[in-house]
Amino acid sequence: MIFSKLVSFVLILQLLNPIVVLSSSSSLSSSNGLTEIPKKFLDFAKRKEIVDWMVGIRRKIHENPELGYEEFETSKLIRLELDKLGIPYKYPVSVTGIVGFVGTGEPPFVAIRADMDALPIQETVDWEHKSKNPGKMHACGHDAHVSMVLGAAKILKQHLQELKGTVVLVFQPAEEGGGGAKKMLDAGVLDNVDAIFGLHVLHSAPIGTVASKPGPLLAGSGLFDAVISGKGGHAAIPQHSIDPILAASNVVVSLQHLVSREADPLDSQVVTVAKFQGGGAFNVIPDSVTIGGTFRAFSKASLIQLKKRIEEVIKGQAAVQRCSATVDFSNTKKPMLLFPPTVNDKDLHEHFLKVAGDMLGNDKVKDMKPVMGSEDFAFYQEAFPGYFFFIGMQDENRPKLSSVHTPNFTINEDILPYGAALHASLATTYLLEAESKLRPTGGNLHDEL
Image (cartoon, rainbow, N blue to C red; front, side, top):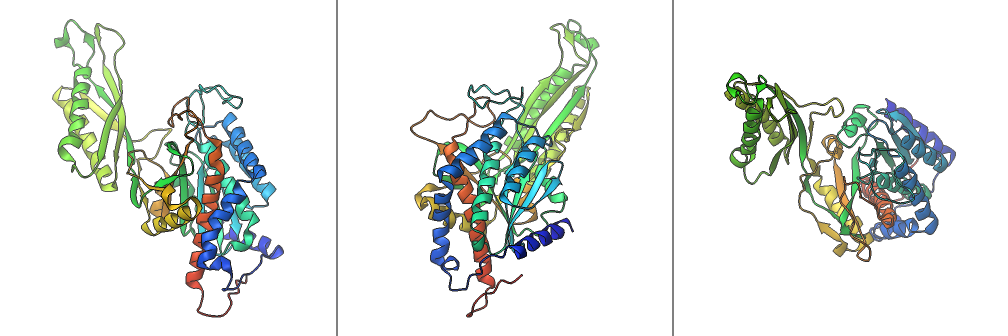
């Protein structure tokens, strides 16, 4: 219902400002026209005034990083830019999210997505636009992602006559463990979307290159916390205590057997215990120990199996050492139980190869091996076809860039026009190809509202 009302509003705007209707003989609908769109959009995005505008937006967002579901100022900035572009949108969606619409207001609907949230990291990069919020930093490139989708919106707005459908702009909160994508879906504003594209900056790949693959690209993931309880006492007389540290140590070792002895070697999985907290004195056995970590796999079935066995192993090993254990797979700040694997649609992969190849050259489009990192973009892919890819930003003539999720992470801002043009090109050509498949043989197409 929300989606339909907003689309109706877009239709009214388009009726007030009708776009040019192209005949079926138009070069834009031809194979050659589709090939030229990516190059044309990149040239447009590289204009100095467009680049400066995107850089300015990115730096404003970088100075004011906000954590998941707290992106109020970031959202306000995005809405201001959409207002300037004359693009209607729905707000709020899932607390701080925004969904905008560019095009005819009619099907098909194709979405492009940007995540908005920052990380709880203290920035150590000393530059003019350093984070002004202590303990918070855009250390994963989401400030650049937002700038690129806004850049794509500007490109699309300047080329409305080429849109044979509607591009949905998704500005999503809380990607960093908060399950913002799932909440955007639950809000119902994406119910009619036919496909979605998303990207992520990649510090290690050369600028002007992209990388992805069909099928599983990123792992699904889950979190666990466990409290192993025993009986505290003096370290010199352990027979009077029930030692939870010993029990927890056995748990950590046993959990590694889930991958080495229970998982198919051809089905990549990871179980990592990254938290171990217990005791505060060298001569005191504590009452309890807390451990926690993550588990990952490339299929949802494997994730569910890992979750089941992690609980069984923790409770079973604790019992062997006369301890008890509770296991929690949720978290108040990260409430999603399982993040599904990121699985790219095979047809959209072919579309991506063509568009990226036309823009950058086929030699700049790289095949990528699956990575154990996870992305909540996967929730969109469970609802409708989706495609996620990485865009390189390393300039060989500049110092080596640091990895994401580190306090010295930086963005090569030369990447912004590439991301904006790719978003706009993938969406525009997707709509044109969908329109050409529906066009009757012969005669002119009249896309009347």
